[in-house]
Image (tube, rainbow, N blue to C red):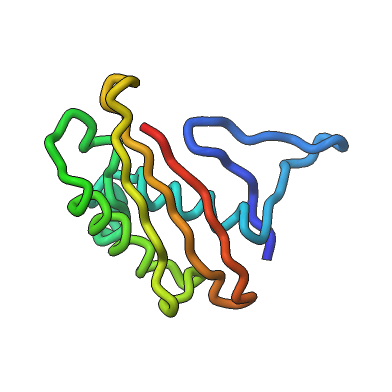
Length: 122
């Protein structure tokens, strides 16, 4: 089912006809996963377990395994992410880029079984 397209830290976009741009499939799931990972812990009053709060952790000393654990726990909450095989996560630090962290996510879609991957860099 299509949803309104809303990239993180962006505004609503319109299509060629002036209607709100909608999104579905893998891009919709990616947007939902990014929203979940970037939303502050207890950021939603009515859904306190939603969100990983990754942006609030910038500047903290976290190991790659801690970051992987946080991301994995949030991916497990998304119905669109198949639990088996489990998602593959990579966490790498770029020391040449002020210690930026790149999180690689590969999972299988729960409905289609198709492998999907994307990366987040902070």
